[in-house]
Length: 361
Image: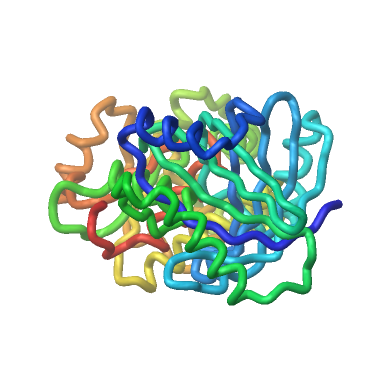
């Protein structure tokens, strides 16, 4: 593990040529070129986002590093932090993502950037210039001073950073006052922002639920065989044709089944906690589904605790838009989330929670 104090400022960069000429004139040396993929994590209450605390896994050039930076100390939009870094085997990437999840830290955003790093050192400090091109965002430049001595006068660091940045004042760079993590989150938020006045969130979880639905079908089939001596086909199950024949005894069996049901993916429970936060923000939660009606009603009743406002049964209709419209729901008034895995779904929910009501950037 390595620890150090860093302070930094970042700027938008639309003219790399002038910047690179200035870097060369000041005798900064190019020390690395490569692609960096940074995945950022936060707690379920988003304290890490609010306090600009950084928990990150970085993959670059077949290497992996876990970084933790504590709460930012704001120096007029420069940020000074104690940074701790841990070198890890990149083959363990998924294991660490799962470990973070088990500890209560969930994926927020992924920043994919190409980076050129230039550097100069003196006896006490390392001065770095990172010229970045971020996927879907464009060009930035970051000026950073690193001090290996953890006991350092913060006013001195602030002064040195301002002097460092002033060397490039002739370029008239516009300051970028947010972490890359937050710029990417805002971009994703704007990508899914409803085109009309926002009423709520429309979510579809069928990809995740299909294995649990198939398990329930097997149980449902056994119950129907025992009660009515009938062999239930998959299409009959999907159409819920025996729904009217569910008596109190069968209902009790189904309730017991769902009481004993174990959802193996902890992210499913996290999803409903995030939906609860969104509902508390005054947004409506709509769930659309092609799953069996008895299955989804029982599952939602067990888990959601009145979080889902309305379930729309798609009945194998390929046009979700038309089916929602029949129920008086204009999809253009809702955030629409239909991802194949819960990690991506929960990331988008966290982004909505942290960016709802902001002005587009």
